[in-house]
Image 1 (cartoon, rainbow, N blue to C red):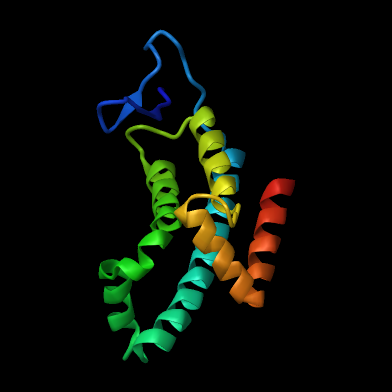
Image 2: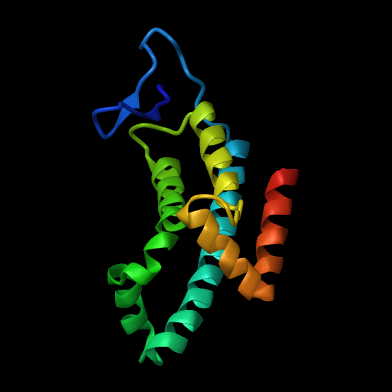
Length: 158
């Protein structure tokens, strides 16, 4: 089995760095997979909370959204929600990697996914676009702040 991680070349898009075939990379254990499933579920809870907070802000500025189908289309197509994509993409990446039967998740990659997930939960008023908007959302929603604190504390303790 091989494990791979994304590597970015200065002049190209993401590519996979695969260890030489003579080096065996351990496949993620059942415990690591369960742990990542928990991380995925926690990220999904935070993502839903962020979506709800952003929906409230959006509706204050643009008016009520008719239904959940209309909201989904807005989330997909409106730049207002673009900043939330890193968290949604991380949830999808964990789903894809933990369910890939042809190229099972390796222990090193499982650890990297966990660490990337923890970084996503770091709100920072001076950070990148995601971190700044995440910080603003937490500041404006006490419920979201409590949820994020619980999730981050739980993941850090694992």
